[in-house]
Length: 341
Image 1 (spheres, rainbow, N blue to C red):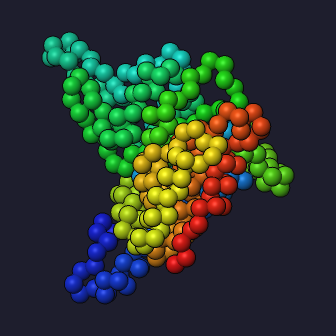
Image 2 (image 1 turned 135 degrees about the vertical axis):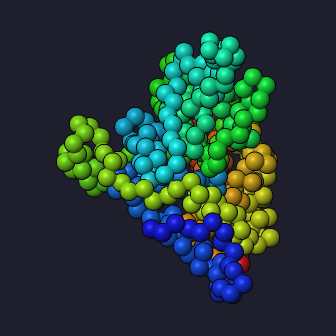
Image 3 (image 1 turned 45 degrees about the horizontal axis):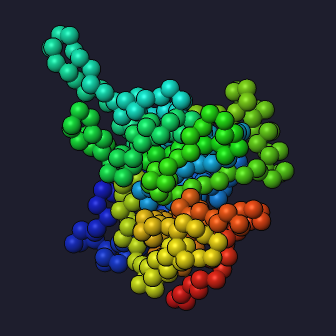
């Protein structure tokens, strides 16, 4: 796959502007779909999750992956890192992990008799925060500035993080012993919260068949995957997606969905303005991923659950009745009318 050009705008002697932009969008979509095809080789039975992760990557957002052990959460991130030519770092969150282990710290140099800043693993392009809820709140908070402002303050200095920058955090929703729930402020900084479920019988059979042929004892090998994306390609994808035409009615639909969660029966906590922004960014990324020339309401609706599920809170009485956040949000999506373009 050839790299995307640095500047999507045509030269004066090139094709007409609209035709040139259409070709750029088509090539960008093909590049994103090539990454999808590579990921599907090792992450089996999770096609929807793969699309959502690519949506977040193109939109410049962060992802919280939730699922029971063994479903391939870490494998998905490792596979994405293999397809990506930029920098990758992994942090295994544990109860004794300190904020400085994430961001970095000052080290005294005996030769120069001065303190030098040693950057932590946070200074990367793709960061895997494995089992993020295993670390206490003070360590989790070390990610807040980086996730929102793309910089880290060390010893009074604001150090920028190279772009693109994406945090992919994993957590196990079943085992709660020795875990620390993520605070609302940090949850809100994740653009999407994705839930990985069990594959169906045929997909699981295919997975076991591939693992049995793998040189690794109990997991699929990501080494055969080819590098499809470079850092500059990701930035170009993000730039092209942000320029996709968005009708005012679609923009209004995204805002109405987010605002409806604040007064919807059964929800005691609604989504904030970040949700409205994430819906629009995610819709543009989904439109690019499917090869569209503009955003449609289904692009907004397609990423709504992942954008909203971690930003709202269900009423206790509904929780007692056995209803879930997913069910309440699906009712909301069914009843809020989408525009017809």
